[in-house]
Length: 168
Image 1 (spheres, rainbow, N blue to C red):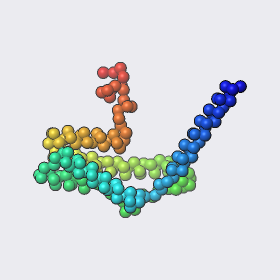
Image 2: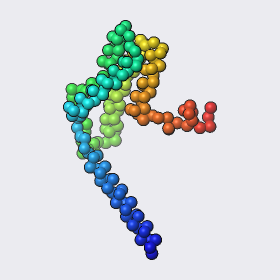
Image 3: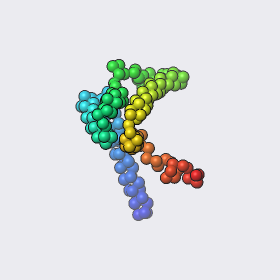
Image 4: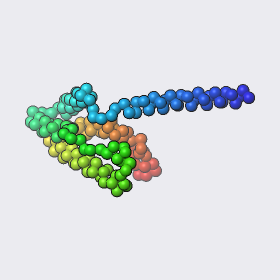
């Protein structure tokens, strides 16, 4: 009898802790709606400026490479469209048919692909101006950027070389 009470008490305690965690998550879930505030935009711009200055210093950009650097920075700078693409509301989204939803997603992917193509072209153009030593430094910075941005830490791969376990 004592054992059953103890287990019930532990179970109720665990459920209460889980419920508190879920309610806290639910309260913060909808905290940020809409476009970023001026303060958030300023903080992001400051962070980008610091990161670009670090890259500039680490790459040891020469005076001859400075115009290519400035062009590169100008091309990769995120630009907020004057009018953001219209997103359907939750109610509108629920009313869309499957083909309409897929069309909406396809448009989003087309815009993303166009941005990625522009960034890729800018990186290739700038990369060609760098010396082999600078290219290695750029590659390392880019790997770190990918890890922070996309969370690719190699844990989803098999062995240390990226090949699945048991394969050469």
